[in-house]
Amino acid sequence: MKKISVLIVAIICLSAGVLTSCKDNKEEKGEHSEMKHDKRMRPEHSDRKGPPPHGENGERKGPPRGGLPEETRTLEEIGGYMIGDTAEDFSLKNVDGSMVSLSDYKDAKGYIVTFTCNECPFSKLYEDRLIALNNTYAPKGYPVIAINSNNPSNEKEGYEAMQKRAEEKGFTFPYLVDEGQKLYPKYGAVRTPHVFLLDQDLKVQYIGTIDDNSKSPEDVKVKYVENAIAALEKGEKPNPSTTKAIGCPIK
Image: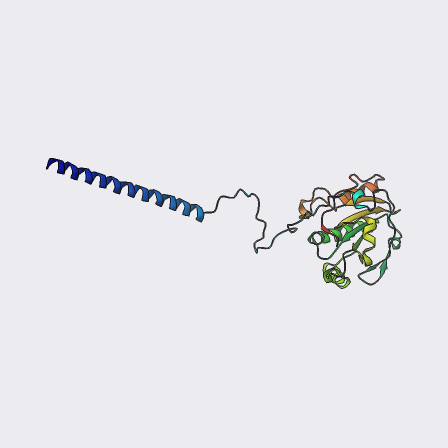
């Protein structure tokens, strides 16, 4: 009887141990499951700093992502005009139907020749600044001459679209069409906008971008074109005389 009692006690203890182990394993698995579920449900903390890339209505501010807006080739690699070269005059059709040449500006001290277009976001960002440049410097002898060299097979860049854009924005400068896309390779224009500042003898004195902040005119720190004009007015050479053009490729 004593042996039987001992055996019964051993069986009871063993059963209790098995039940406790099973319960512990079940609880441990439950904790793992909850941790995995919690990790899956909660997004990881983001280290992103600065303002969100979209406005209040989900519209992205500034130039679009994708591609490199800054021209990486040198002037030598591009193969157009270099600083000090004499540019050829041209005769191109304006949005008002007239033909425009640099020689039409009898009292010009220089020319802000700017290759731009209708649809490039960078060109649009600079339209108001081009109007301001022309309004300020044309009376001083430095008119803006805007040229669209994009292929007109894209209707949004065609002549009628140019006329519409000029009217909508109230351009105070000529907006010329580079028919046959013959002019921009001579200049070496590769982006829109791309500025070539010529002096009164049509010598190229500055090539590049308008200023150092395409996104925000309020945050501009260096006004390259204005500084180049100021240098010419003093009888000096612009410094810098070249900057990297920023914008969409001419197509």
